[in-house]
Amino acid sequence: MATQPRARYLDGPVAIIGAGIGGLTAALSLQHSGVAVRVFEQARALREIGAGVTITPNAMNALDFLGIGPALAEQAGETPRYVVRSAADGRELERGPDPGSFVPEFGASYRNLHRGDLHLALTDAVTKSDPDAIALDHRFDHLEQDGETVIAHFSNGTTFEAPALIGADGGASAVRDAVFGGQDASYTGHVALRALVPFTRVPRAVIADPYALYVGTGRSLIHYPLRRQTTMNLLGNAQAPQWQAEGWSIPATVEEFLGLFDDFPEPVRELIAAVPEQHLFKWGLRDREPLPAWTRGRVTMLGDAAHPMTPYLGQGACMAIEDGMILGRAFAASSQDLTEAFSRYEAARRDRANGVQLAARYQGTQHHGSTASGPGSGKTAATLGLFSYNPVTEPI
Ligand SMILES: Cc1cc2nc3c(=O)[nH]c(=O)nc-3n(C[C@H](O)[C@H](O)[C@H](O)COP(=O)(O)OP(=O)(O)OC[C@H]3O[C@@H](n4cnc5c(N)ncnc54)[C@H](O)[C@@H]3O)c2cc1C
Image (cartoon, rainbow, N blue to C red; front, top):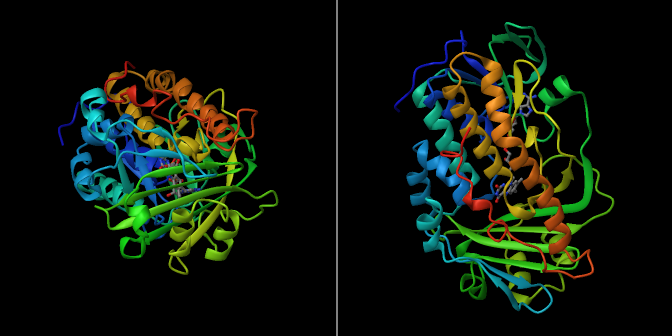
């Protein structure tokens, strides 16, 4: 990968906490800018949950620029045109743009990826550039910083001293807690259920209408194909007032899923019924108020650590990718001073990501009909115009 001269104020690798989609994109973008990184991940092995992730042209522009977009597009295959449907009767409410229009209009394609494929592509690219870039089994615990340096302390007893530290440790960020103090995420009253269904089990009516979002009172459900039409990704959101448990992978049952969507149109019910046992998981959706600042001294944050969001615009990973891309560019553009690099980064990112965070919350209420206009009046990321931001060329 072509690199640019390294910023002179960096006298050692930048520490990134968390090897998720945002942390790894930042690592790759910093490497591209000639900045060495060490990514510290709490897990003992690198892995992602089995689910789909929608990568829209705004984020795909960054993946293309960083060199991993074309292979991911090849793995994913073509993206069908999406349709928004009424959960009451299956009626079409909105038809998404022609997938062929994305490259001419926004410079990049729109792909539905398997999260594992995206994570592996990022990991491979980062370690190809530097085999020692990722340290596993390092759970960040706390930090100390002064005008010169930041020291990260890990629960395995080790420490790492760096000129700068990036908190990319997700929605329950320990970096955010360490720097800005604890702020609990509040439960939104919605539970999400997810499954991957092999195409051999997918009902014909769903294969004929492969990318659909059904919106109904208090609930929505989306399905779309992955890996060249071999797997169907299924994601449902429903109200569940009493949710307690933490985590993204709590086992759920087909019976429970069907019970929540029993009045949705028949193809959807058939698809839920086709989910193989033990392949169904749920998690409680949590939300936080946007933060007025992401940076303190030599520490900043990105992705869900900075702006966790509900899934109603499918933009959480896309925002993390945009953050990571811009962060690397901000280092490349600021040759003298870390303060300048972080200021450029936050100035380019905070209004955009915090705005999408609030929009996702609002569109959830619109999709689910908790307003006078009823279900289905929500906008999508496409109709909100979110694809026209390009993190590769956005002024910083
Ligand atoms: C099922 C599902 C479907 C989704 N679909 C979409 C979609 O279609 N489109 C979209 O744009 N977004 C989607 N999202 C949201 C998106 O996945 C998240 O917004 C995105 O993963 C955030 O990336 P991140 O890197 O900030 O955090 P994460 O992906 O959560 O990564 C954080 C990493 O930090 C590590 N970590 C945590 N704490 C510590 C610690 N103390 N020390 C060291 N490491 C730590 C974690 O193990 C993890 O590897 C979806 C989410 C889910 C769960």
